[in-house]
Structure formats: C-alpha cells, structure tokens
Length: 112
Image 1 (cartoon, rainbow, N blue to C red):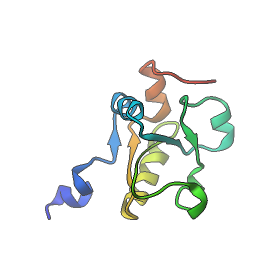
Image 2 (cartoon, rainbow, N blue to C red):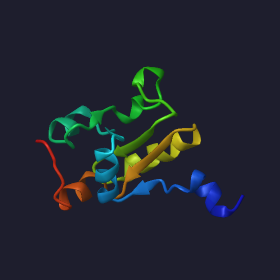
Image 3 (cartoon, helix red, strand yellow):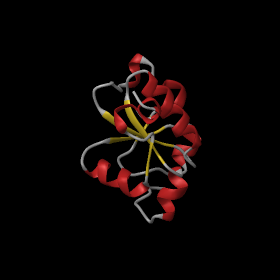
C-alpha cells in the first residue's frame, strides 16, 4: 500500500470540483448539505438533502456505506472534515471543494 492509497482509499480524492459534483448528482448521486437549519433555509442546492453534520453517522440518518455520497457546506471546510471521518468508517463519500461558495460562483442552480 502506497502513501496515496492510505490518504485516498480506492484512489478517490476526498474532494471534487463543483462540475464533478453537478455531473455525479445528475447521474443520481445524493448531495447531502451538512449545514445547520438556519443556513439551509437561506438557500441550498435543488434536490440536495439536509442532514446536519452532527447526525451524519447516526443510524437514523438514512445514509449507508453501499452508496456514493457528496457532502457540501458553506465553504468546504466542514464537509471535508466530515467526509474524511465518514471515509474512515467505510462510506464512499466526497466533499465539494469550496462548498456552496464555489457552487454559486460556478453559476449552478441554487434555491433561496
């Protein structure tokens, strides 16, 4: 096992670009917005799901290790940290680099 195999299990980076996230979401991958409810209510990605960070790995979250997930937060910091924790627990999960700030700058759909 090489260094990058340890850092990125299965050869997958813990972060993806907004364009990659948009494509994966169009292909059916779930986008999970981990911000708090106040942030969520101010706007979010259409068809994304709201699951606060504190509830991500709870059994009642509805998330499983046998599906691909994309996490997003405001700027990508919280979602990257959460994605790294979830990956260590066997989830196939990634984070949107730059978060919703980057998503909005890219001109992708955003519901207010």
